[in-house]
Image (cartoon, rainbow, N blue to C red; front, side, top):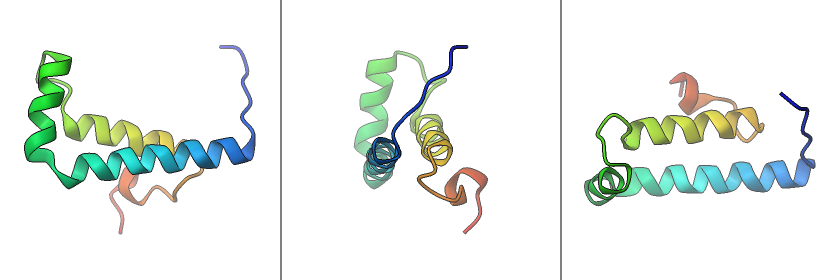
Length: 73
């Protein structure tokens, strides 16, 4: 895989955006889960999986300490 670099400021902004989206998904799962299912077309990738991916990417960007990703308070 080719190397890629990201400016620290850009990484912080991206991490904040990913966290915003994860928080938004958690805010109203009753409406968003059916919408995601309609979009994806298969229940194998639901809100929990999407939020876990967002939390992992946020952690990898240094946007959090991995509390949500590792399940620790």
